[in-house]
Length: 164
Image (cartoon, rainbow, N blue to C red; front, side, top):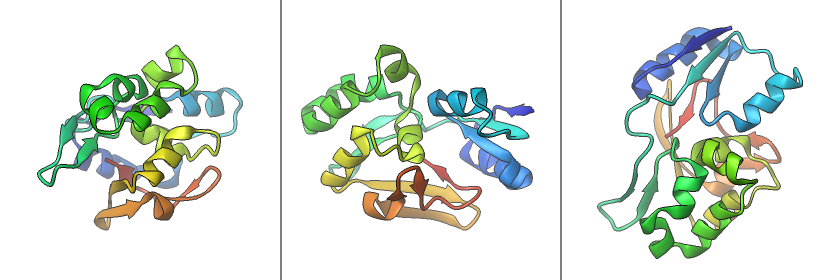
């Protein structure tokens, strides 16, 4: 298996485009590690987002909203002062995900991309009318949680797209 560590979103998208369906995105890796262990997936390439610039930010947007980068850990989102101040219910939802180990490893974007029906943050994000920014070969698009999360373990992400 090839392991790639791009430093930009564009580089990650290029790697995904070249590898096609044989690649998996690695964010925190909590769900992917289980799937690999049980041989539910066998990708030829892993594209790690750990070094991609700009995906770890928690910040206010110019219109007063809150932006969580896809690589922000669940624990960081739960504890971040901006999340706790602006959306305490979201901070609580992130604070009860899995266990301490999972919260420290799993990411906001990975949690959404997994679309696990038993995870609280996606439902809370939907209740807060949150939007997900997605980048891929066709450019950038913004999706509501209802448009992104189609069913248990199923999203509207197209091949080669990343949640940012």
